[in-house]
Length: 242
Image (cartoon, rainbow, N blue to C red; front, top):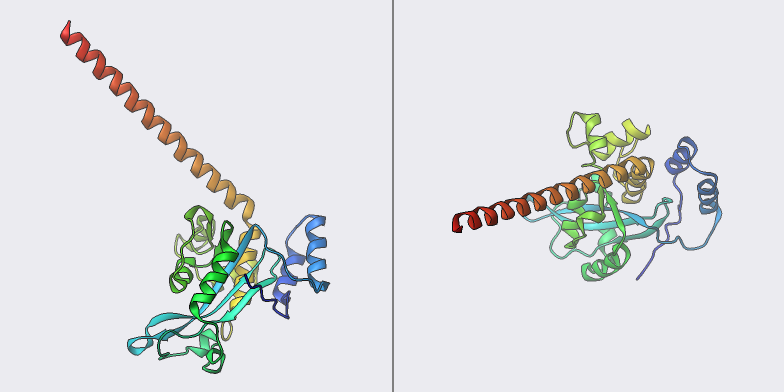
């Protein structure tokens, strides 16, 4: 597994957020340490993934992976690489993706990226925004129970009348941050997405536990109903015979 350290380990947005959001003294010390330490960032229970894509196919309308970034729960960059094109690029979408032809000249083959990313996210909570799009261009899957998608979280959707908010809108409304004012930066986007999760982690995880609990209760109710129905059928059959 290859872990790449971004030289700008903690962004200014991340520092501002750490000052705004109430955290324990232990976490504060961890954030302070992460700003000054030169040690390689560590894998955490949750990681956040974000991708930049270029256009391929007819008129460049199809997505192809061009850059992938992964950060840990402290916002430290674990992985940041450009991906070698598997087919001709029709539109680099530079104004949005920030990717140019030069970025992809010595990029890493997709099969290598897939293996390295798979090793990092395996058995971990995978945070992302519209994460299904990222997994699709990576040709990877991840257990649904281990995915936390900030676009689909009901707590965030309720702020937008049930719609699917953009990351830019969420950053502005929930965190008070202005992002994506120019070309996107997958490291910065991953950091903001992770902070959205971290900031609302308790209520998010609680809602999932309650949902799973209700699902379990419903299963037991159905099992009991079937058992009762079988007993009634057996009793009815026995009564007819006698």
